Length: 329
Ligand code: TYM
Image (cartoon, rainbow, N blue to C red):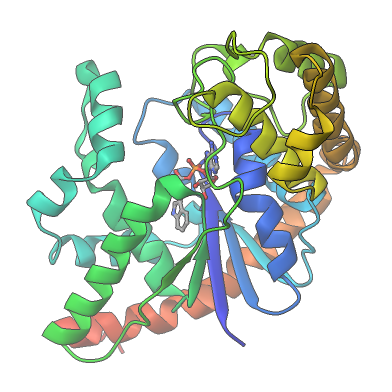
């Protein structure tokens, strides 16, 4: 079986962007592939986190993975920090990553602008850790949203560089990015991506948000004064809502344009909200049940870590040998 790997940072509440761009696609891959899905808690501390919130967000993220339809018997679900090989391989990969390469990462540039007062070196080497996550499991495909493409390119380069410098060790992973919904935009600034760390709560919709709050946020979504429901770059707000509608309903963007010919934004927004609410309803209900069953969640991520650890150690052992570390015996 081919291997799939992906993760989400527990740096806030998971959003509709995470669901549409990533998690929802993972669900459709679980039958066919050997899938590893983890909570990227090591990544989360590259920006300041309150320990209490990090713990809460990590557990909640596991519950949201399962509530979205990931079957714990078919997928390996775990916390990144439970498998120490991630940090260990990242260190080795840091030794073949160029400063210039990391300097070019657009996410680093954006995030460092926002965190000028607390620019730490982990934020800079974050993409190397992400490469380690992927290469440890010899992943064939990495299902992510558009914003992770550059990081994946680095992972591919590092795999090839290591293989060339030492010998064939890593599978070179391919990004798996869906055509629709790979970039869900902010509801308040539709030229920016929807982000869980946005200060403005109206900019994003949570994966397990209550229906009335979803309706309110969609109604408030920034649009334009054109007044026509049209899929056009000149109308980024409307375009984003059409994308969301299309991805969640399976209707094409053209079908949606036709449906709302001659109709106002009010009716369109109500319908978008309803599609979101109904798509997320089963997720929220299952999520609420799961949160009452912490023992069950604990069991899942403990089993997941055991399984992930075995796979990861196998790769790390090879890497340590190739770079010249003495085996411990
Ligand atoms: P993160 O936590 O920012 O996002 C998790 C996943 O959701 C996708 N995504 C979006 N897709 C569409 N529209 C959006 N507005 C949107 N926002 C987020 C992301 O593309 C991602 O697929 N570095 C990663 C986490 C990570 C990882 C990995 C992923 C760590 N190691 C190894 C894959 C493989 C991140 O910060 O994702």
